[in-house]
Every structure is written in C-alpha cells, then in structure tokens.
Amino acid sequence: MATPLGLPMRRFVITGTVSLAVIGLALAAVQAEPRTTPNASLRAATQLAPKTAQLPGWRVVDLTARTGYPGDLLADVAAPDAQDAWAVGSTTTDGQALRPLIRRWDGNSWRTVAAPALPKGTWSASLSLVRAASATDVWAFGIREYGSGGHQAAFGLHWNGDSWRQTDFGQDTVVYDAAAGGPKGTWITGAVAAGTGSLPWARRFDGRVWRPVTLPGYVWSLSMRTPGDLWGVGRTLTKPERPFTVHWNGHGWLPVSTPPKLRDGREFGFTGVLATGSRQVWATAVPLHGKLINPASVLLRWDGTVWSHVKIKSIGESLYGLAPDGAGGVWILAQPAGVPFATTWLLHYANGRLTRQQAPARPGARGNLIALTLIPGTRSLWGAGGLYGPGDTVAAVYKYGP
Image (cartoon, rainbow, N blue to C red; front, side, top):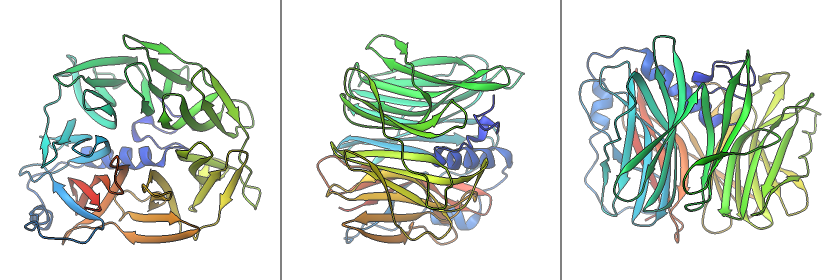
C-alpha cells in the first residue's frame, strides 16, 4: 500500500506526521541491517550511572540493555497519572523480524510488559502509538506484516487493567494517530488501500466495537483536551490539496478556518497538533514544494478565531512531537529533515521566547526522541525514543523535571 503521496507506507513518509516518518525510517533501518554482536560503545552507553540528585532537566532515565541483537526503539509514550506511564515501540530478537515492545512505569521503575500473542502467520510487528485515558483504559496501535505477499494490517491492543485484548483493522490499513477520552471516546485516523492509491480511514470506539467515521480528508494528527474537545489536522482530498483543521465539539466535526499560506506563497503539510486551551491550539508543519518536503520549521497558533504563523528561527529542521509544558508553553521536537537517527533537538516556546537544547545521550551514542507527554498535574514530561550508535539502537525513556 502507498501513502497519499505514493511513497511506501512501510516507511510512513507522508506530508503530515513527520514523527511517523522518523519511526518508519528508524524501524526500517533496524530491520534491514543484520546484527551479530552489539556495538561496544553502545553497549557501554546502556550502563546508567547511579541515581544522584539532579537539577530538573532532560536526561535519559531508562534503557533496554540487552545482548545479542540491539535494535530496540520506543515510538510513543503516554501517562494517565504521575504514578503510571506506558511506552511502546519495537524490539528484535534476530536482527530482522520486529516484535512489539511495551514498557510500563509503576511509580518506581520502568519494566517490560509482555505483549499478547500475535495472529498466526504474523512474521513482523511493531507498535507506534499509545494512549491512556486511565490506568485501566490503555490503547496501543501498530502495524503487523503477514503472509508471503507482504501484506500488512493495522492492529490495536487494549489494556483493561488485567489483560490485553487485540483488534485487527484489516488488510492494507495504517493508523496515523489516536486520541483516548474514556470507554466511549477513543478515536483513530489513518488510511486504507484503494486501487493504486489510498483513502482516508477513521474509527471511533463506542465501548464495544469500532465504528466508521467520515472526515474531509487524511487526518495526520489528533489532540484531545476532553472527550468533547478534539482537534484534527490533515490535507483535503479535493484538488488542489489544502491543509485543513477540524474540531469535534462532542456532537459533530466542524471545519475550522484554513491556515494561511507561507509568506512566499508556498503550501505546507501539517505534522502535528496540540490543544492546550479552549482558545489556544498549536500546530507544526513543513513547507511543501510540489510534493517534496523542504527543510524548514513552521509553527502555527489558533487563538479561537484565526490561525497565525509563529515566527521562529529555523536551522533546516522538521518539527513534530508537540507537548504542553504545564505552564502555558509548549515543548517541540525537531530533527534535520530526512535524516534518520539524527540527534533530536528539544525546543521550548513560552511567552514569545524560543530556547533549544540537544537531546541528552551517552558516550558513543546520539539521543533520538520520537514522542513527548506531560505528566498530569506536574510540569515534568516523559519522552520516548532511543540511543543510536553505529548500526544499533537501544530503546530509551527520557524525562524532564523531578
């Protein structure tokens, strides 16, 4: 199956959702390179220093230190409360086929949680999204590959506090993003193969089954403040394609004014959205030249009436991974466009001021973050990603604040 731009969906390289592009490229690289023994410098990097008092700041707090075939990666993280958090991604035991990786924070430490058995015939599978409405209502979504024809299907895992339940969404489907708002308020958006292309695809869970949802185009990213306040960003199906925003008010999906083009007249593609207030929504995007992504940074803000461009200094990066800072500002992830496993930059925007810092790492490895989440009731955040050394990755959890 192909994405709307005709690129291989397995790599998730689409005009929206740069975070999925990073995930797809990372997983493809992990899967493509056979391993024999771990890289020595990366193996040494997994030995965390003894815990000491640290000033609030970004740091690596958990690593999957294994021997044999390093190739782990965490793609997303969610926290229903300060004492509970989930991170998901992929692991490999033979250097080739991927398997879901699930890690859970229990208030004291991160531990691996066993994933349920995959359907018969599955030869590779990975998780890319996790959403947690509560400690007993957690959803994880990913892609599994099966059969001799290279088929793939999106699947979901639901944790009810005691066990997992699996849902398969059918052949040639992919989930772009998800939002969890309780037993009857979980949404997913994605695409399904149609002829030589694909069509938008969305579902809502009603507490028993997933029901189809009609949206005006491909929705790359979702952000939910409450079950009655959900935002989506994407691109229309009409020609010429345009970026669009929609808002769920608890009763129906309403169109929101179209964001303006860039000053030079170029269009852009959304990569993420974050609603932090009833009159404040943030979005990240990348400029488009035809169907190519040009390295640049685009940040937009909705004030309840119109979208406006937020002027920030760009150094040839793509922005993604928005998360609130707990005090009215936002954290943003940034990476050089089209460079997998590059060192991630952590950007913080508050009160009109932008600061940036490189992702922390360990000797012989580079820090790579894919997703962030605010820890409820705090100004601290969790981050998910990996440490990347020559040819190997080790899954990593990051933290900001105490």
